[in-house]
Image (cartoon, rainbow, N blue to C red; front, top):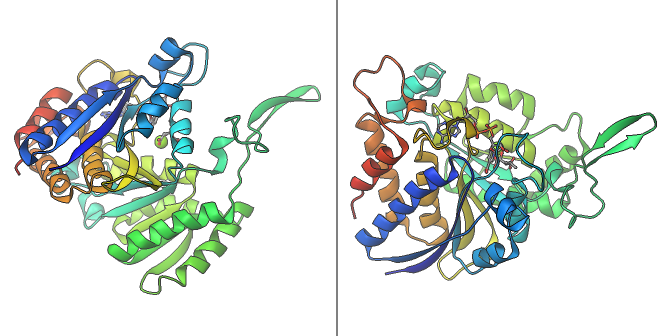
Length: 372
Ligand SMILES: NC(=O)c1ccc[n+]([C@@H]2O[C@H](COP(=O)([O-])OP(=O)(O)OC[C@H]3O[C@@H](n4cnc5c(N)ncnc54)[C@H](O)[C@@H]3O)[C@@H](O)[C@H]2O)c1
Ligand SMILES: CC(C)[C@H](C(=O)O)[C@@H](O)C(=O)O
Ligand SMILES: [Mg+2]
């Protein structure tokens, strides 16, 4: 019997739709396995900008701090939407406030969804990789006034404007995420690919040095360095060659969206953002699907909730230490996919044996298959 407090930040667009399904899955897990989960819903993103004038309020950050984990939907709208702070700032605030430096993004296509991927199935066979994306530094943080000396702005230069963003990494920022990646690789296939742009960027040269140093503490893990452009190509050409990949913030953001197509849809990918903070049950973390607020399909009951439901499984495993419960959720998702239920994004047009359902129906199918 476990008691846990979960902060739910559903956010914008399809965020509330997919988050609602994940919350219902967690509630059902609570009933079946006799745990008490309490959910505190808070505003984030555009809704918070409208209500509080900021993408995430101090009160909401406080509610997150009092929780064991955060379940996050998505923030953001169409780019021209509204004045005021960007809703995406909420994510930066959460990531820096809780020092969530390791963003874990597992990518393992379901065989039953082979046809949903634009790649031929023989290329997908055996694909099972985990990205460890650095999440607390790099190009992303200049716009936060809390980070001094890292300008990110558009400014005047003579007769024209110029824009600047700052890419910095300290050794310790690199080392901690690289250690996480080596540890994960040690528990899996013992192969690590470190992805960088060391033929151009100083930050990548330092990154390589730190990887080489940390590698000495993990002799059982075989590792390689790979340039990010080559990695983009090899992820599509031979995805099964990869086990664990570690990379800086922006490279990881882009590569994982590209790699999501191995599973058929960006709507399939879960993520866990972890730091060093611990709770009585495990590691504190933020759990969210890899996709965004998908404004083009918001409110239409079309969004695939699987990425968010699998994120809830990661929450159970990492933040609550509930491994059996996490596996039960993952099994239920697999069974539903095998049974042929699909949201439109993972439905291949010629598959007459599959059933296209909406967000809510797919969530219900998953809940109904949960077994203790
Ligand atoms: N973590 C986050 O909150 C997060 C992540 C990425 C983008 N964003 C924000 O989301 C907004 C929209 O960004 P975008 O359109 O470039 O990316 P997006 O991921 O929201 O959507 C890209 C495409 O994928 C589709 N898609 C996304 N999620 C889906 C799902 N669950 N099921 C089915 N289809 C899905 C969308 O319909 C769209 O065609 C922007 O404001 C962006 O900043 C937020
Ligand atoms: C919305 C944006 C700031 C965010 C990121 O780039 O980190 C998103 O794309 C993600 O992958 O979580
Ligand atoms: Mg992204």
